[in-house]
Image 1 (tube, rainbow, N blue to C red):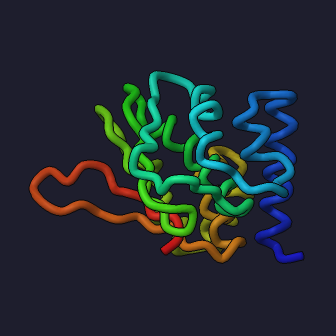
Image 2 (image 1 turned 90 degrees about the vertical axis):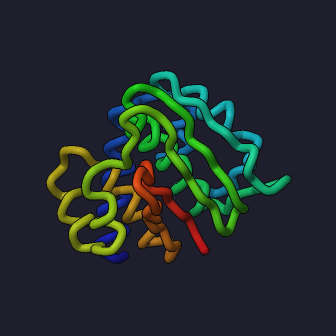
Length: 170
């Protein structure tokens, strides 16, 4: 087992222990991951997000079903999105199960600091997990690294581009 996989497993176990029985969202994001994630399950899971965060799935392909590894990454991104919308707002999803775009829309919306670095530097994400404080951002990046799934920040253009968009896959 790789060091990255070992760190992921330890962190997931610690999160499950902290959360206890917890919400269905946390169980799905941090528990055993064997089935895919149908997109039509996302609204019920997102209803458990803290704060006034709405999920817009109108841009998703019909019948979209995320494979287990991408489904886990997506659920962790939903949790990150809630923290990234401090005054509430909308998380828009567009694309398909293989090429998905996530856009934050709300006052003060911004993906967590360090996310871009963790996406390109697996060692930095591992070091952040070993540090043990805010683990969800490096964990999500490591889940993508470990699954061999590309997770990228896309910067907007113009005078007021808004928060970066995330691309899962592609």
